[in-house]
Length: 155
Image 1: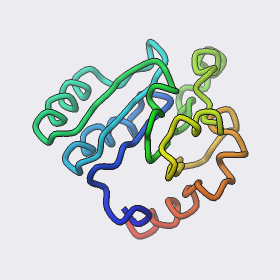
Image 2 (image 1 turned 90 degrees about the horizontal axis):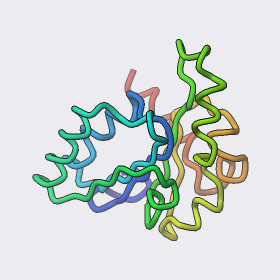
Image 3 (image 1 turned 180 degrees about the vertical axis):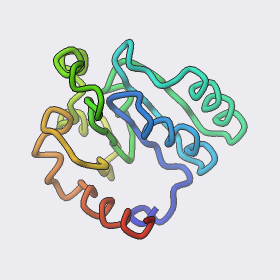
Image 4 (image 1 turned 135 degrees about the vertical axis):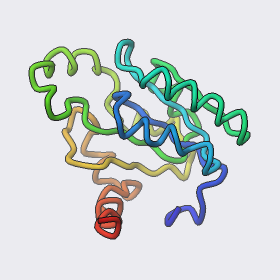
């Protein structure tokens, strides 16, 4: 909102794990007027109940919702590219399997070429290089440090 002057009409692409952070975005996006495009590998999709709620909310609030396995399809025309950790606390034993499953889901400048010309990048940190490459993470389009600073006002 701070960067774009508002959220309504923006398209957010989440590329990565169907985790709790994504599910929070899913529950709120349509109510904020944000179109949501998600790419996750098979077996790592968000909770089905949350997906159904998101589909209903999208219809009610007139937003678009896409769930796919294709990161470039999710990134298509997106204003905001977002990812999060692929291996959360408590999943350390699954690390090898998860990293293998998420190959091809790293956000790169190639991914960003599919996005809108005014794209930005978000990650709630800490970030691992397999999730987003250095070129995107340290680019002028990356708002990760502003995002981190904004969190201190929510505590």
